[in-house]
Amino acid sequence: MEVSLSINGEVRSFDVEPRTLLVHLLRDHAKLTGTHVACETSICGACTVLLDGQAVKSCTVLAVQADGCEVTTIEGFAEDGKLHPIQEQFWEKHGLQCGFCTPGMILTAYQLLERNPDPSEAEIRRGIDGNICRCTGYQHIVDAIQAAAVELGKK
Amino acid sequence: MIPSAFEYLRPETLEEAIRLLQENSEEAVLLAGGHSLIPILKARLAQPGILIDISRIPGLKGIGREDQALLIGGMTTHHEIESDPEVNEVCPLLAETASLIGDVQVRNRGTIGGSLSHADPAADYPATLIALDAEFVVTGPDGARSYRAENFFEGPFDTAMEENEILTSIIVPAPQGKIGGAYCKAAQQASGFAVCGVAVTVMLSDNGQIEFASIGITGVSASPYRASGVESALTGQAPTAETIEAAADRATEDIEPIEDLYGSAEFRGHLARVWTKRALEQAVKMAGS
Image (tube, rainbow over all chains, first blue to last red; front, top):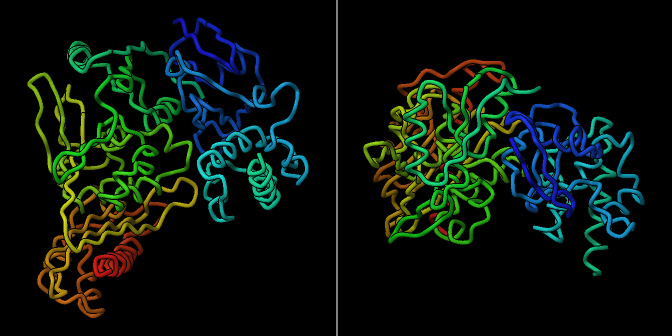
């Protein structure tokens, strides 16, 4: 089945089986492996991407459901080679250890800050509770998102 | 984890969707946001031959107002409900309930119609929609008809809907007056599903007595239910601590609490009584303020 979607601003078409999950289209067909696969059960959030601007778990979306939509993955998050302020603050505040959850965590953080530019610590923790860090580095992740909120607020 | 192969159809009208359902009733299932169905397909707990995606049918999505009621399209997402200004103003209990479902990624995709049709006995909406005395409108080959929320759920993952029917909208009455509402739940830690969820609506009369109380409970029994005993113990009474506590003790009258790895039947019964009391206290406080 033909699926056509915009990935990081570039419209691309793929011939996939209807049962193909969006995460596999991104990784195996579009060769964008920044989106990670971990639990495969809609829990961990490692596969989070933006679908028409909304954070979704791409292991729980069929590629055919994304037909005609815009997808943003971590590869499309930096602009003109410059890291997004959220990425910068994950770097600055050591918001990652092994890094496996990071792409999903950053895209969920983006969604959170877009809807709530000045979140409390509790709101941040609730906002990212669909993303699991198995290094348990949550404190630094929360710090990074708080710092990113400050940076984004200056713009 | 990859589902077994299926054919994917995306009708553009409700009529076409119903026709496709009729033509393929043996092997077709409806796909809305997919956040109940796709995990089931991946685990191969179901292997339907055809998926009919109804999420893009115009008119099935969105929130409107009709007199003293909210009209919510079945394909409206949990996020749209939690963030809608009108829902927050007219029926904050429903917005709050939607905001407590799963996580943000789930709420961005999952739909109210999909969730209700799936009829998970631990889902959040049923408690609240029973407490709000909502109506579910379903459309099938013979036209539309509606169910009261409390008559819709017939068991785990089972509803009163007939074959080839689609849950198209939810009508939520929004009575005026000294109304308070609350939804309190003890959640499974990983998924957020309710081990026990209690939704309460109360209306106080001008002299401060309880004019009516409406209570829906989810997660505790094989189906969400109306706690009629609690309601009748409150009607016409002053909302004192003693009255509320005595009423809440009747939360599991007439039902058999279920038992699973999240809690024994005894524990669930205990949760139902404690959370009913808490939800009542919150709702009464809100109604009086």
